[in-house]
Length: 100
Picture 1 (tube, helix red, strand yellow):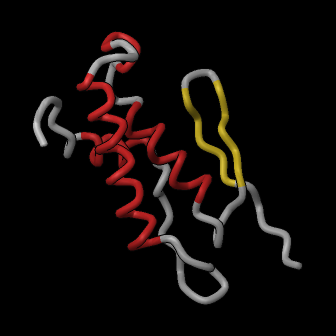
Picture 2 (spheres, rainbow, N blue to C red):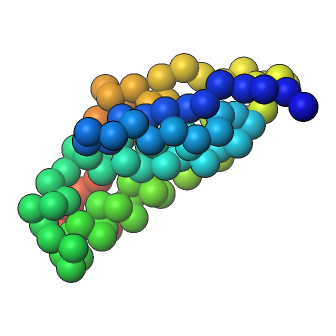
């Protein structure tokens, strides 16, 4: 069994941590939270269709990165910066609130 470092992503006042690659869960959840944090979801409210659209689009973008970049780093190189704040802000710019 190989021990690997945890992946942690900041979200509000928390650090959300999970298993690192080859598991993609922590990176994907970290990206969804990081992309979503560029929007005022709390201000939109829990029943807001726009808030749910942002979460859905953030998930779509994170899973696209998962499919393209995340792998077992023993066999394929993993890019750095998938949880970088600037990178996630660029991904968030792809989301147009209220538009498919």
